[in-house]
Length: 347
Image (cartoon, rainbow, N blue to C red):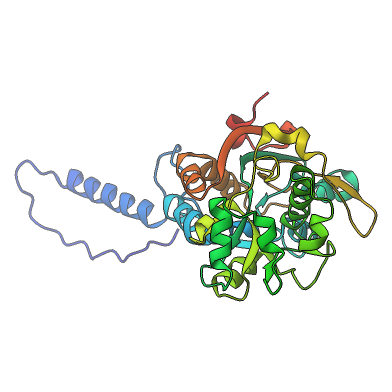
């Protein structure tokens, strides 16, 4: 070991009573040894723990962009010492990127459990073997306070005008997300199909949305709120947390069609969607869930992030944004869950 400092020449000094030379020299050696250990990083305590290190990469549903980037992410970083890095996009699109090895997040948060399906099983490399549903939200219609239709939309929000008649108004610019890339895009279709049933209005979805993949209405999930805020759109289909987070006015929808009430699951199941490939899916309550993929690079950081998100601080941020807590629901292989998260796995 190279000494991290230079030893000063030893000068012989006369002995003083009560201070033997050997004792003085021994004390000097002890002091030098302590300094050396400190310089080399040794603590002398086998129980000392290493400080958090590294970046935690979190891929999350685009409906959480502002919440994750400006609230939860920075708070987690300040509280734990890990470096947070996030990526928001449609959950389905993120799953495709993960499967194609374009991204390798440590944590993947989705607004639909269906986004995990392409990553599960041996045929898909067992990238995902479990997930934990932790909160719910609901579909709403957000609108721009600067829209020329704002007064009509405000009337709909107060219940004095049917919201669907306002959305049928010629010239109103309506935005939604792509059902092929984002679960919210599919949930928008479910909401409109349920509205047809609830209001006994056959053909209502076609009147308002046009074709399921009507490109005139479809925008990236991570951009939709910004487009509404800037006045590029008059109204759009959002999750409640998105409009609350952006302080935008919105129209609430009945529980029978807003996909936000888990007790209405059997009613929601009346709505289905068949994509261009012929695959049919059924409506379910909107639940946010998370997983740590098997391709995780920083497992300790991933565990710390999940612990923070599901702890009191993380839940406080979620609730304030209109994302409601639910009884944790675990799905998958419990043996693949890191030990640090065992407290969240209920039998």
